[in-house]
Structures are given as C-alpha cells and as structure tokens.
Length: 69
Image 1 (spheres, rainbow, N blue to C red):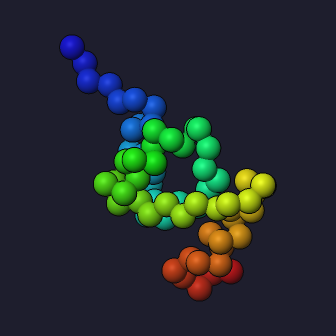
Image 2: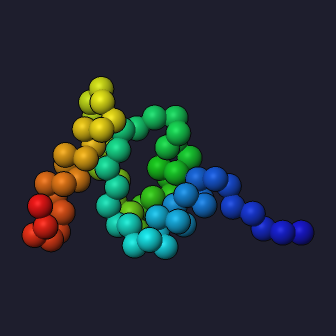
C-alpha cells in the first residue's frame, strides 16, 4: 500500500520545500484544508480581507524582510 498526500498536504509541502515562511491571501474554500497545516509547517498565514485577490500583493510587498523594493 502506498502513502499518498491529499492535495492540501502536497501544496503545503511544496511551499515548505521552496522556503516559504509567510503567505498572504484571500480566504476561501480552496484554502480551507490547508489552513490547518500552515502553522505546524512553519508558515505564517496573513489573511487579506478585500474584494480583489490581487490586493494581497500589497501587504506582501510592504512587509518583506529585505530592502528590495
């Protein structure tokens, strides 16, 4: 018998493998399974509450830990 990850686990494992530690986004049914495993995986989720998903890029670009702008 093989052990397979559910899609949300595979998604979070991919983020961790890419070094993702902060995530900004609009909450919705697509994220519901993954939300519970972000914190145990070391990913800080910052929900962005607005009517346009592309607005999540603004807090991400203004809160980076480096000096690139």
